[in-house]
Length: 470
Image 1: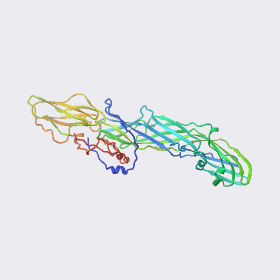
Image 2: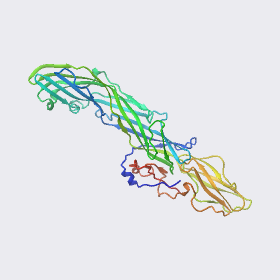
Image 3: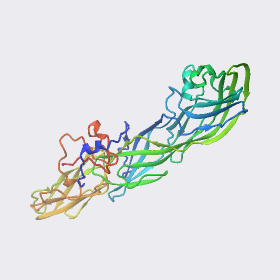
Image 4: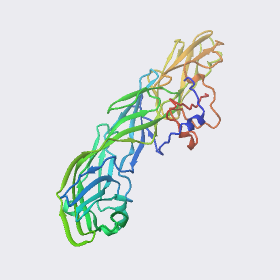
């Protein structure tokens, strides 16, 4: 296989891209699918902020005492993320090749439904009370943060959660629907007296207020793009595929980024309660107002979801033939000889081999031979003939980078060359001492120290290569 470019690790680190800690796995040996390999990686995304939306009731009630409620959907205090999209057993990447030194990558769902969307939310109200009575014309604003300071336990009562399974990659989308209690049982907080907010209402009014609200939202998650580093394009739909140059290695690891959107839609019911018992110097008042239930449908703007980059590990067959010509030595006229030549498969996937000889004086086995991962095959080459003779032995395999390799064999002093072979693994010198066998890496390498897998995204197809010696 041809040598690939090595780029400085410091350049990779300078890119500043973080990688998720993930236990990648690969389809390491499947002789029934010699030109296909499967890799997976884990993806998880936590959204910890509130949604970019507010539901505004507008002013409700008679002119004497009006209320306005602006209610947001937020995470539960100390209750974890608002939503989590999790693919814990991995999203599947299928790699396949046809001998053209290209690898096709496809994001496939498979039959599993181990992905989950988990949602847990509360309703967070900002309130305004407008009083136009007994000579007072004033508006009092009470924020959700100020309310939390006064609530026992520091959290609003509303707490709704749901979980929905889906099949990665979730290109078709997944809907997570939440339930709600009856509105009569949905006080967001127990009634609070205006005297708890002297900095807001000063000495103007006495009384208490509360708010009921419910919603049954649907959280709609959809994967929009899977970027496979070094590929010719992103995958944007179920069954979509991309192409990448075949690489010289026992495996390849591809930095993979998943992007999607989360949209929330539903209907919200809001019912405020206010009772004024004093306005300025006028006490003994009973301005208890029954407000109509306010209903409003809503749809939030799509929230972008970008998972941490994870490495997808793809096992490959990696066939290596002799780098120098093989000499059978002297063979008596009319005699015959055999020579055993080692063909190695250093890859993580089974190699399927077949052989051809350019000269019928040299014979090789027919049919196909399967060589397991990290295994070798002793190729028996026979010779019968007179005088000097040589042949090119062709090794055809499912090695995606070098599907055809040759080496030379000769007898009776024929020139077999003393340089490297041609077309592939045969022309590669030693790798650095201590290299652990990372064939190729499209971004990062598990064979490098643990800190070496960070910051590679955005530098193109960054490849760390173990070069070979036979």
